[in-house]
Structure formats: C-alpha cells, structure tokens
Image 1: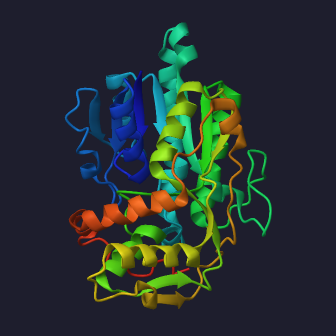
Image 2: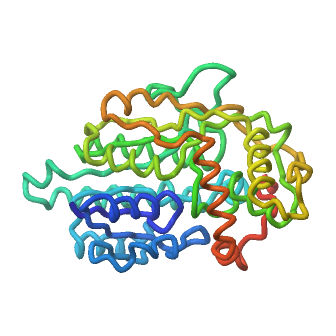
Length: 351
C-alpha cells in the first residue's frame, strides 16, 4: 500500500512514518511544508529507504496538493498535518483556521477527486484517515471518560479548529461516500517532540536550570500516550478500522500536571546526578493559568481494544523514563530544533 502522510515531519507524523517504514511493507509519501515544528532530521533513519519519498508542500496549496495526488496515486491518506499548540492558538488563531480547517477541506477534496478516479476495486480499498485530538470533547469533571459518543465542546481556538475538521471529514463520508476513518487521541509524549509542550519543555528547562512553569496550581489532569504506541494504533486503524467509524486512542495514564513535572524532576535527579540544579523540583514555578484551560481529559479506549486488538505497550512510568533519557542524550537535536525559533518563553498570553 502507498500511503500519503501529511505532517510527516512533525512529532506524531514522523513516528508514524518510522513505524510504517521499519515495521511494515507499506510505502510512504511524506507531505509537509516544514513549519517551525517540522523537522526532517526526525526521519534520518528512514530517509534513504526506497519506500519513502518527501514532498515539501503546504496542504493549503490546492494546486500543489493535487499535483502530489496525480504524481503518486496513493492508496490511502493519513492526515496529521495541523497546527497543534493550544498556547499558540490563543496568540494567533488564524493559522489554526487556515491549516486545520481550510487545509483539511483541501485534502478532502483532493482525496475525493483521486478516489473517484480509481477503478472500482481500488475505490473500495481506499482510506482517508483523519487524526484528531481528545480536546474536541472539552473538559471533564473529576469522574467519567471521553467515549466516541461524547458531544463536542471545544474550549480553545486549537480544539475548535480540530472539531471543525472532524465534522468536515464526517460530512465528506456521509455526503460524498468518501471512505473515512477518524481517531481522537490523548496527549502524546516521547522522543522528537518540539520543546514547547509540557514534557519536553520541562526536561530541557530543567537541564538548563531554568524555571519550570506550571499553570495555575498544576491540578489539571491529562491522559498521556507514548507516541510510538499511538503510531501503532493509527496504522491498525488505517488497515482494519471500519469505514465511517471513530476510534478513541488513550494511554490509560491520567496524571495531574504538577505530578508529571515532579516525576520528571525526580528522573532528572537520578539521571543527572552531577547537575548543579539538583533537586530539580526547586525550579518549579507556578504561573498564571492558561485562558480557558480544560480541567481534565481522559479517554475510554475500549472500542479500539475490543474491535482492533490494540493496547498501549508503555506505562507512563516506562515511557516517561525513556523520554527523559532520550532528551538527555539528544541535547544537540533540541538546540538545533529551537534555534532562532523558540527560547522556552511563555506563550498564550496575548489572549
């Protein structure tokens, strides 16, 4: 199968491509415009493989997208390209509307034209897999889980733009018959994540002895999913998921933000015993909360487990330890990824 992966130079997209090339026989066309968070070095281990091709294309460029479809004639699309950082969406929502809503529309229309041009048998095998987030569901109280039937209630410009893209995908399935599947995942973490998100920012800041900002009192709760587990789940859904269905993907790892940061500090103390910044927990700094900050996310992943046999291989403890050790061993990658782009400053204050 030849799979067109959008956003393949990003954090989750690159994990998907590494998995596809290393663990399957599928071919990959990576479509990415290389924004600040896109980094081709995340794909060094597969870039010379004959089953891998890169196309520098912005998904909002309909002509360029159409050319990619005509040149490569994919058997499936995995649509991961998105602006994804909530704080950046507060500062500048326009890019999120353009990429996440307009870009998804352009991908859907190009996929529909391509799908309709295929012979009948190939039409039946084609898939458009849209990768989304649990943030579209809004905020949970102290109990309960997000299921595939949970009503949408997005709180941020980011989650609203992803909710809109989800609705477009379902509409293209129901109106035009485009064979789509949709997944909503919990918070990802792991190697190669751009150091603006909570876990990599905490690790890199602790390493440098910088303050570790925690929003509010750190009581907000997230369900954490190791990125390689997510990549496996996405390929399983692409290969065996039912057309028109949605699958929630979670790590069964609910943690308060403050507990995540404290655990990272303890792992840093253990792994970096010569550091002048030990104990790293003394670097924790509570800052003004994010506007519209959802209290709790938690995924019920029983559907994908029961229907498709997927479950996470990593616990939060094992995955976080791997992640901390990866960042400690790859400080040069982190420095190069953010050079001239991001210095660890607080985002999301302009709202």
